[in-house]
Amino acid sequence: MKIKPIGKRVLVKTINLEEKTSTGIILIQNNEEKNYRIGEIISLSTDSEVNSLFSINDKVIFSKKSGVKINDSSKEQILLNLEEIFGIIEE
Image (tube, rainbow, N blue to C red):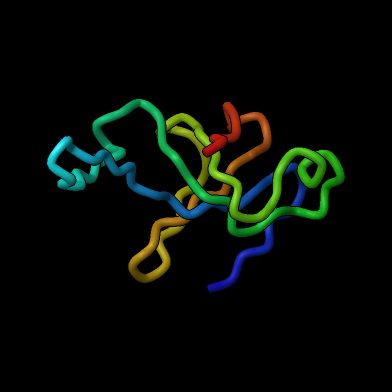
């Protein structure tokens, strides 16, 4: 299913956080343990404010309770309002 957000919304796919130990072992942190989630923007509405703030592939942080969750096969997607996004993660 392909979703194109309208209004002041973005569509993100949720991503798990990785943490590397000193020995090189990668630990995947389950986002359910935290009160926030991280997502990668996969689709933007045509709203000018949304497009001036975000780009496809931006990683954003938002509340665990935000948005409308959409399960599409193996990946979870969340439709977020602009006001629900706390910030962009810069790497």
